Image (cartoon, rainbow, N blue to C red; front, side):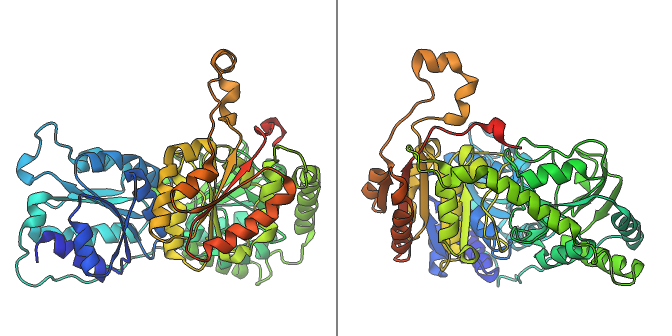
Length: 545
């Protein structure tokens, strides 16, 4: 076998089932020979997003892999790597590369030096004999520690070289690491002594599969839990102690309880200051637990820190709190849960007129509310696109099980949600996979709806069509007044049909549920469905708490 065939065989041994790809890339054919299914996208950025969706949906256990041709393929794929890097998603990128002898010769594009800033680890296979070694390092980096994309560039001449002898390669095993016991004892004392503790949970809880342990700690201490945008669904939001998740928009329970907190325990989160997450107010004692020491004291001063896998950290903290409190913690105090529920109900009541609105153009919150009460949320995976759909969905969509929501946000490339949804459907074909996007987002990636058609991926795409980039309208009043700058148009229902899918346009509130029901039935046949809702321009974000 040559180098390309050897790489395909290594992917097979590592359990890879799908190869998101864009030709010309000889790895596609070699993977197909081994029953690794190629999924060809229409644009390279979407291939990376498909791989991203596979990894997110499976907690990185089934790594999403994306391969593209060298030169323009690697150049066009850069944004996808940047998005996965910002969200710490373990994806494997396998670009082709110019021959080794062309190193440093302009204008050839060499992926490794360009991608080093947006990958966890990147390397070039400079000889075919090194292929097993470098692929072992790639998969170890993907499965151990903080997530992020990993890149292995295979130059054309190395890929064509015959691999000598038998291929010696066994699947890589990951390692987890836990916190220092002395640190755990100190943290446990602060947690039990806090007057108004809030747990701030990130996606590390999801990757560690630590939802059960997070629930145990919350109930042991009777303390409320908020999640980050990518951490949403790591704690069930129908739990009495759930505050919800925060993006640009947030929930009233988060505002109330985070503001009054004296101690904030960040678990499985980088605690990054970002426009797409809730800032922790000053004056709090912060306990920061992460599996990456580089996160500690990055954006917030950490009074205490625990380094390790979120599941191992939570197990250790729970055991220590029980040891210090004779096993009872604060279980006898149910007042916090009652107050959380009271604040949540008050907040929902304030918004109920939007959830039940009969106005036209349609109110986006009515659509989200109707959809949430229509589907089986334990068997639904939902995501959104950047901008208004994200901010409208995140506070009000109540997640009830891990990985039923895909959150992304520190980088916000329009259209990325479509690829994530296709990846989710590949990984979980029996689940309803939904993407909510705006008209600006579908304008960027809409042709890749045909990728779902061609690959029989019965995803549900919901388009909020208000004919404008509404979230941007306040930033350019003169441009809008003179030239109508933010306004755009399109019949996206017809686009979906033209690309071989199913589509419907909805303009009346009584059509919302029937159209969604029909679309969901269509997805069960393997046909992607698109529901285009004609919606109002937006909502006054000053009303967010």
